[in-house]
Image 1: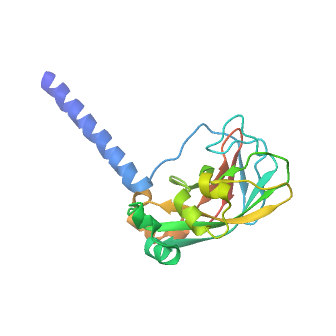
Image 2 (image 1 turned 90 degrees about the vertical axis):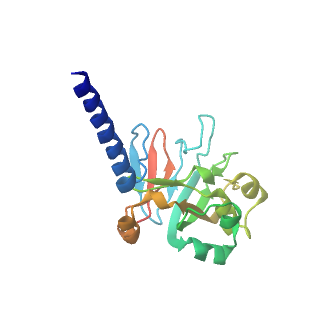
Image 3 (image 1 turned 45 degrees about the vertical axis):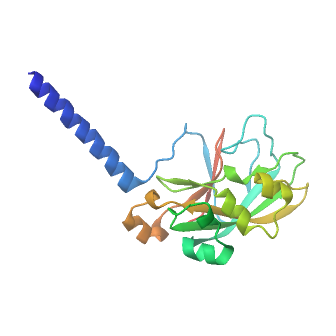
Length: 206
């Protein structure tokens, strides 16, 4: 009886280990947090922040009046990114990113908020994976137009009534997708998550 019990436990552990390995290889990272109401936006639609909190936000942050509009995007191989913008990736040792997704964004401030938008709070997400904003690469891409605040903190502050175009860079790590899904990347459904609580805003990229 004891031998059967040990064998059963061992088999159970193997099954669990196999399941974890299968999910890791075939479904990437699962992005989850408590379900909130979701509002979806499309490319070129202006998504307001309102009273909602971004991923890195807090209850005291007030960015009501700011809006975000994603106008375009491109997928760039790491080598092409380095050739185009420099070798920041190699200097930081980020060698596990085959691609960068660069989103063209327009932020506007129609309110009087003293705070700005933290670009690091934007999340690129698929159905079962996610990627954070690559702050260093984002600053590198926007180095010609970045203000001191943006360059030093990653926070974009705009005077009332003004807008600014910014490129947001997301590093895509190899283990996000299986080889087959990388080869069929254009079939992936992708959003940029603008806010997460109490209402989630997702902007459809593809």
